[in-house]
Amino acid sequence: MKRKLFQLQRFFSVTLSNAFIATVLLPVAFCFVHMKTNAQTTQRQKVAIFTPLYLDSAFDAMGTLKDKNNFPRYAASGLEFYLGAQAALDSLQKRGAPLEVFIIDTKKSEPLSNQLNTVQMNDVQLMIGQTNVVETKILADEALRKKIPFISATLPNDAGVNNNPYFVLLNTTLQSHIEGIYRFLQKNHRNDRIIVFKKDGAQEDQLKEHFISFAKNTATAPLNIRFVDAGNNFTQKTLAAQLDSTKRNICIAGSLDEVFGNKLALELSAVNKTYSIRLIGMPTWERLNFSKLHNIEIVYSSPFYSTRTSTLEKNISDEYADNSGARAGDLFFRGYETTLRFALLLLDTKKDVASNLTRKGNTVFTQLDIQPVFTDSTAMTLDYFENKHLYFIKVFGGVKNVIY
Image 1 (tube, rainbow, N blue to C red):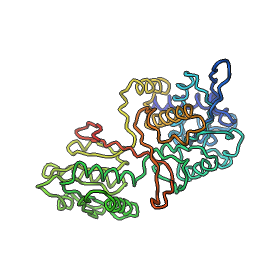
Image 2 (image 1 turned 45 degrees about the vertical axis):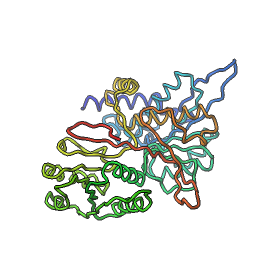
Image 3 (image 1 turned 90 degrees about the vertical axis):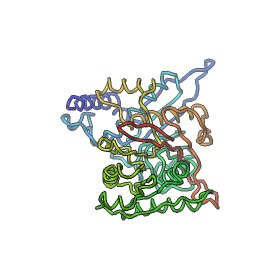
Image 4 (image 1 turned 180 degrees about the vertical axis):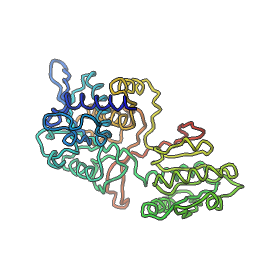
């Protein structure tokens, strides 16, 4: 572990401080050699990528790490996303892609709004970001003003954005997850006993309301779903009292709280020999430790799924490991596939990329189904675009695979 951390620190300092930090503080981070066609220069397409690198916090004015003995962990997620994007851009550069790409540090001491009003942002035709709620709203507003797409790669939240056809959410919202789970239940468990175990909380109430609202609008007969307020101090006995020994019990975690979800899974796994149980988790369960849950079948939804077994995934994983001594994480792959897919779309459509956001194809690792979202269906006002494709992943006996 110490060796890997040391190599990550060295990789971070060498790659960013020597090869990257100077250009981040200047307008251009990448400037690819452009292709030539019939001896004429092809116009380069401009892309801006936003990620939290915390360079002003990690480095001094001379480009030297302030703390050479400790890896700046607060910069890890932004760095990983950037490295994924960089790997995709390297691939595109090898193809001679006519791109000019700028990296914007969202945690720079200068406000993000000021960084948007710089020369290098002129004529940018696509923005991609790993951003929080506040930053996402700022960039979505900028996208609307410029009439160019902003691709939110990681935030599962609309950030209060509406009436903005240039904003694209790749990480599916909670409401869409609940709608997807409801359809999954309709297809696979209509005749089973369905129970949502929840606790008190505003988010839990919202989750319940999503189930109820979608049930009212479903074209078929609504499901018989029982909502049980289990609280935080539930036991095997209190949970078992809600189960039916003569039917299959579909138990749903009605909370995004990982502590609640982990306890629910552990307690239900203890009674799984007496009752037939399939446990449906929330999208946050990607981070759940399944090592103690081998005897219960768990299913959760996710907009992203990667087996890490394809030739491309192996190649970029190996290259990442060779350079850093560490295993490539989810954000590395997210940065790679988001950058590659939408850069290719931009290159293909030129300045008309906003009209082609729902186009299928250019799949890198995961399937995307980008669809318009209309909050007010009567007014038919397009609020934004969202990835509606969900994978349903089953975990049982330590084995994980996609079932739907």
